[in-house]
Image (cartoon, rainbow, N blue to C red; front, top):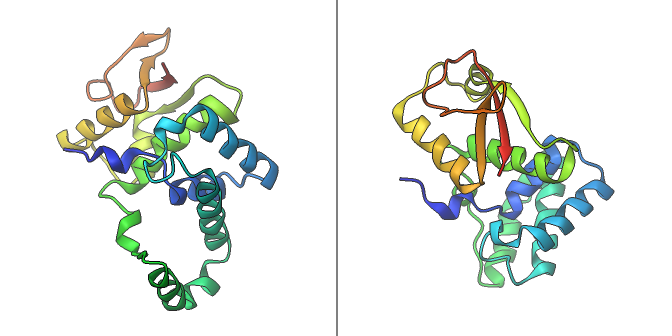
Length: 180
């Protein structure tokens, strides 16, 4: 069973999305502002009431991803600084069993709602699986896909806007995802 808390957007997720989409500062700022105002319920509960902390943490992780080798050398000092404030930073808190797939659905939802100007994303199911190192669908993976789609209010369709179940279509079918 999926832990719903893992599906909320946290600062590291947003930094990964900003970094992987190579969003400029202005676009990234506009995205964060829209998320704060329109999608606050999808933010991790720790951030829903502290906009300043939200922005600061996203910017911290974005800077980290841009300059990872240098910052990695300073990680012990960063951990000490966090402990001074009664907080801990652990690598494991930012990763789930399906971390990359979490990020896929988070990114696609943001692209559909706020970035690309299209109200859908289209790809072959095989391409999605291959991108994350899978060759076939396991029942557990399909269940995870379904839970992510449900959580992010996304629906899958075949051509002609025919609703479909991601666990029952062929691997080479073109799948369209829309936010409902």
